[in-house]
Length: 329
Ligand SMILES: NC(=O)c1ccc[n+]([C@@H]2O[C@H](COP(=O)([O-])OP(=O)(O)OC[C@H]3O[C@@H](n4cnc5c(N)ncnc54)[C@H](O)[C@@H]3O)[C@@H](O)[C@H]2O)c1
Image 1: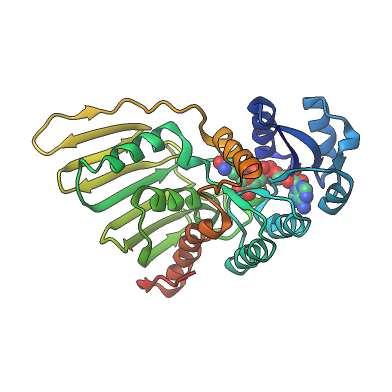
Image 2: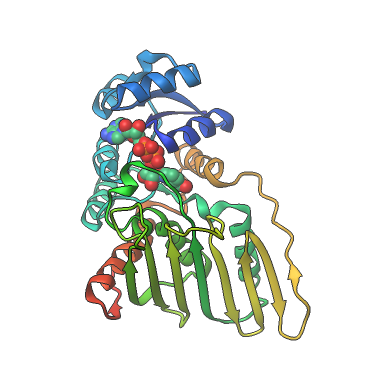
């Protein structure tokens, strides 16, 4: 069992409170929450000892002995919280996005390299059953080379809070999951990006909530991504719908079901893979293993900054209003 400090007890904080409790691999040494009302509410809801809830990360780090820290604060606070933990020698499991800007992400990676302390990012979408099933099909190699991919993501969530104030909420707070999935599925790096973004007239977000992005990957794959967080109906799943055009057929993830068709053969619905742990439980397990055995998680900050770079290169392409060459990060 590892002991952890959870920083941030808001919306997503609930998921981590539940995950740690049901994991059997971790327990809480303490919490940090800057909003006293949220701290009191969550202490009552989860029957927590209020004396274990601190109002800033420094106090928690100096008063509590912990093996790891889970950073569930809004993106603008990720750097301060993560760097404080790394400097204290405490491994971090950080919510996505790694940071709210590329320079902040680079400073986190620099600090992780300098201290030699682990920071991994919660890219839970990789570890859902539909994503694992699709990955399994792609890894089999049966479909041959992939030439093109289309991804469609359309939902209309009313979150309130930081997402409605931030610039490019779709790309920075949501598409990071889809961009990370692209790297996971394709095992290729982006080469050029051309994107456009806009805000529908009825948008309840300050920043652009819709975008269309074309990305060419190093292995020759042409990918087209269309998404909106302001869609008024016919929601796609959170994973989005994916279609891979391959030499020997087509595989798609449609409404979270993987369907494959080899050329000239009937459609086959692929049985979902069986996974002992998925999503947050899987990530916490990877974190536990890294702390107890020294194994290296897939989504370390050193790797994840490449997924985050797709976010910020996409924003650069919006500003350029023309295809841009992907900068190495
Ligand atoms: N992986 C996923 O699927 C997923 C889903 C939802 C949210 N998230 C991520 O989780 C993070 C938090 O999102 P949320 O929806 O819970 O936001 P939220 O605003 O609901 O909650 C954040 C909480 O952190 C607290 N906080 C802010 N700064 C703090 C600090 N310095 N120290 C301690 N507490 C602090 C706030 O008071 C609030 O209670 C974001 O990075 C978001 O992108 C991930």
